[in-house]
Length: 429
Picture 1: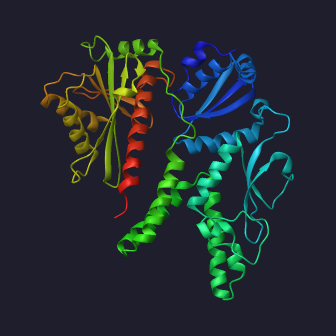
Picture 2: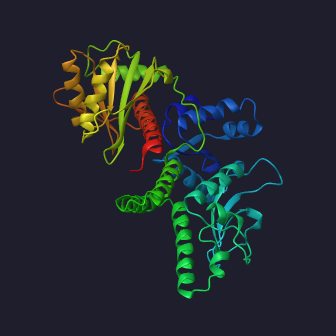
Picture 3: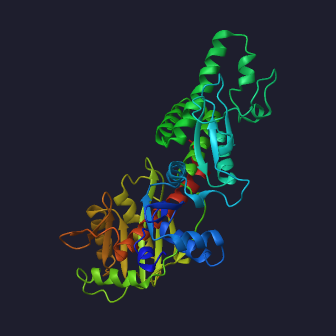
């Protein structure tokens, strides 16, 4: 059975988790916060038979961290397909695994949802992606992708354009292509349709960056040509694709009520900041922007060891001439300390020595004696805000260290969410 020691060592990051009994995999799931999700499994086990069987039989939990929720969705599907855990089958006898299929060998490949029992073994005429844990997730995924890259779902061709071609979800429509008299135009349209399918396959293979880069190049070209109508279409595709990549698949409450983590963190920090008496309030900052545009920052807060969303603040960078994150950090913190908000016992910045140094300079200007640490990446490590900028590495299972990682990830999520909101309102010319 899963015990507290196992749960306490789990990361509070985006990723996939595997409930295991010895080497047998019982259940595979995904989450934007693995630790919080496992805690919800434990709670649900008190009421739900399936959850009880998973939690009660498992003796270990394996985790795999990823960068985005979409990567977690793809990895979850891949692992379920590989291992076929018995508790991932939908809890009804008339249900089975759900897949998205692409009929790659058709003249005009189509995309459908199919059940496992409808899949022909060794079928080389189609690609299958999944399985997906619910019809809703799979349908929403197809719906969102279709708004970005249109495709056909009709099984047979006809002499008339399909309904979806009229609303831009099937373009170029195979029915229109087949009825095109000009051979060269027909050839070009058919190539365009197949290129769309290739892009969709790339998306399901996790190769989204390539498609985003292509969209940004098109947007830049259309804008320079003052073709604003087409530019708006590409802009909207970028928003949808980035939302698919970055937004949570399902919202989960971030939970952290393990005060032992706070005690451990305080104990570690006292080695470098003897003046620290408590960690009642911790603030963490992150900057988000795109090529120096739509510049925003986030401040997330932990109060008494718990995420405190009511204390969150977001900042829209006012000086648009700032060219570096260092300058943006300076503006944000100057604005923050001009407000009569409670002072933090610890200030955390997403970044390394340069970012920490900027924070120290600002605190000196405001005559504030607040301990500062940075959290740098690859691998995650702490930068101590003192003259020698000591780098401190911790085991990935260190609960105090993971408290800072949780804050960093939450600051990044909150900043990214605001950044995308600003872009959605203003991004074009």
